[in-house]
Image (cartoon, rainbow, N blue to C red):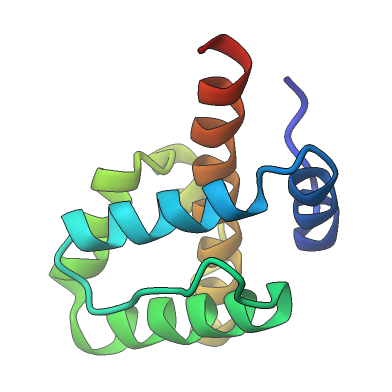
Length: 116
């Protein structure tokens, strides 16, 4: 499986394979497990999904760092990938982490669809 390199390509692939709503459900499930108050409607626009996810990650980094780390653990985002990001600009860091979250959630949905 080759992971998408951009947000747009990830959404395009998810939509093409008719897995976008499953992706949103998976995100909702993992955020609920992490006890983070964020739930997306299954028909959320991709641009809204990206923006709200970015804002939530930014707030977690700034105000609730322990919950942020817990979320990354529950979603199983690669620690190596997070450490490789530039942490000087928190806004950019939050955007990059939000994309890492989306990529990991996409992996889960894609594998479940492919092998079930």
